Image 1 (cartoon, helix red, strand yellow):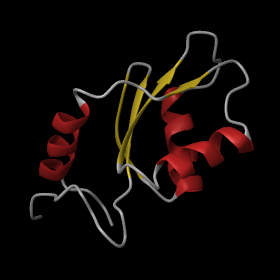
Image 2 (cartoon, rainbow, N blue to C red):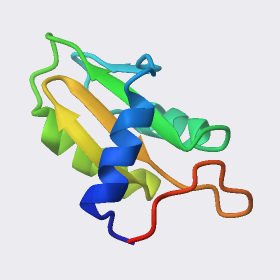
Image 3 (cartoon, rainbow, N blue to C red):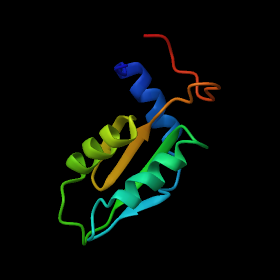
Image 4 (cartoon, one colour):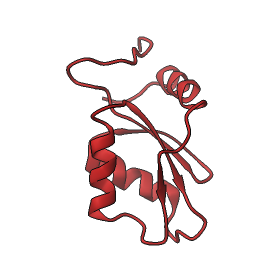
Amino acid sequence: MELTSKQRAYLKSLANGLDPIFQVGKSSLTPEFTASIGDAFNTRELLKIAVLKNCADDPKQIAAVVAERTHSMVVQVIGKKIILYKPDRKNPKIELPKA
């Protein structure tokens, strides 16, 4: 599923009030870090991740890799912040605008 610009804008507005719950540091993406992000999608559908200054990797590349590994979608990468979305299969809490 690909997000439309309207859906992406809606998710950005919801993520505006969220604080980052994960931080990518100099060790970058470890399997444990990716697994903990995957676990977080069990309780929430929208996540914000901060990339710290001591991380040498590009935030866009980090977002793409995390999205691929967790089967989520990249909503936005702005500066050092990443917003990811993964709808709950059984009981989605966020209802996206129609395409």
